[in-house]
Each structure stands twice: as C-alpha cells, then as structure tokens.
Length: 340
Image: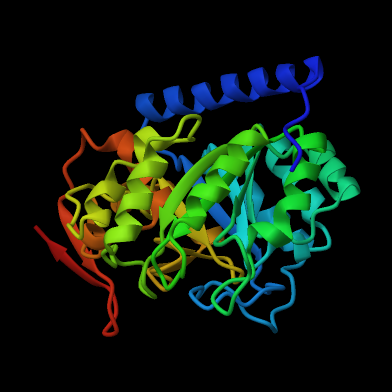
C-alpha cells in the first residue's frame, strides 16, 4: 500500500484558507445563536449500495432537480447556515452535484459531503476540487466486504489512494463498531490506513433504526477506546458523548436539532435528523428564524440515547447556555410538545 504523496504549496494554502473559514464559523456560532451552524441536505435518496444496517437510502428515487436544490441552498443561506453538508443516499449519483457544491461556495458557506466513495475517479475528484468542496467523509465498515456492508477497505483502498493524490479538500475516514459489524478490530486497520494516507480518522458507533443507543460488547469497546487514542483524529474533542454510548449509558445534553442543526430530506422538508424524519416536517421554503428560535429552546425526548454524532457536535457549541423550556416527544402518535 502506498503512502500519502507530499502536499504541494497550493494544497497547503488551500488547507490554511479552509481552516481560517472554519474558525470563523466557530466564532460566529459562539457569538450568535440565531442561525444554523450545519445543515445536511439530501439531493438523492438512491444509493448504489445496500448496507444491511442503513435506513437512509432506497433503490427507486430520482435525483432532486438541480433547480430545486439550488433554491434550497439559497434558502439555507438566507437563514445564515454556516456549513452545508450533502448526504444521501449516495450524493455522487446526482448528475449535477458539482453545481450544487458550487452554489454552496457561492454563498460563502463551508461545503461538505458524505459518500461511500465507490464512484470516485481522478477526473471526478478534480471536478469536486473545481466546484470548491471543502470536506469529504467516507465511512468504511470492514476490511473485507460481507453481507452487512460492501464499504470495505479492500474495495475502496484504490479510491483512497486517488484522493490522497488528487483531492484539494479535507478527507476524513470514519470506521465503525456495533450494528452487526463482524470484526471490530477492522476499525483499527482502517484507521491506521487513513492516517498513513494523510487523512484524519474517526470512529462511530452504529445506532439502531431510530438513531438510539445500542451498547457495545467487550471487544467493540476495546477497539473503540484504542481508536480514540490514535493521533490525528478529527473533531474528537466534540465526541465525548460517545464514551457514555460505549458504556451503555445515556447522555445529559441539550439537543439543538431543528435550530443549530437541520436535516433536509429529498422532499425538501426540515427534520431534526436523519433518524427522526417527520419532526417537525416543515417545508424548508417555509422555515423561518422563528422556527429556529423555537427549536433552540425545545428539549427532544430522544436525546439521552441518541448516537447521531453530527447533532451532538453542533449542539456542543451551546451546551453551556439557554436551558430548554419546552419538550417534544417524537413518536407514532405524532409530535407532542410539552411546556416545562
């Protein structure tokens, strides 16, 4: 396996510029609570893979028309959203993805993407560079593909080498434990390979179908804590919540979903997160700053056992302020709002 190529001056300058913009995002978030820090938006629910643990894809959806995607990006910008991350499904199946990324950067926002990496080739990576992508995350679940997941290091290693050679954007490789992954120690192999190539490496705990805690077994816990000790991890200081999850314990935190974090599905509806689709279920075009303010102060009943890391990370910014004064309970009977 090859090591990471030496970074060019141009790539180092782009990385420095990206870091400066990220620091500005944090500063703005600390100074003001009236805007979303991050939104995840789905341009295509379709995915070219069928991982057994995933509930975020289908095999029939058409891509969202690019004109509609651009309108949604524009509205997120009007709300003051700092980071817009494209997810799915598999976003690389959208034929106009580069235009969507370019629109995010046109508004001066940080542009991210979560992908399985299968469709990456050198020319595709160069197009992502040109569009202005800032961050890419690839989840790799195992070393060898199996019936649970085809997102394996064996299949994707050549794609990672392509990224190391061609990508001007930051790349994070996320390995996982839990959720039926057969060999927890695969996460260590994947993490070391990511660091060898010059990427950052994180580890996630696979949640159940409702995004809720599923305690780790002994070997899974050992691997998880060893991974946390590896150098050059990304956002690890914002992942302290996972320690409680690994130990099968709830977290006491203030979830700011619907306010600081938004999830916009392929139908253009705003949800708390990918695992609580339907709440609040408001069309993005109708989502206002009043909605942001209401949800900032709303406690979510699903929060104690939540494992959705992006929501935890964003909410961590405001963990010290604004006690939540109302409560919502996502459930089959609908959204229950209880004034405290």
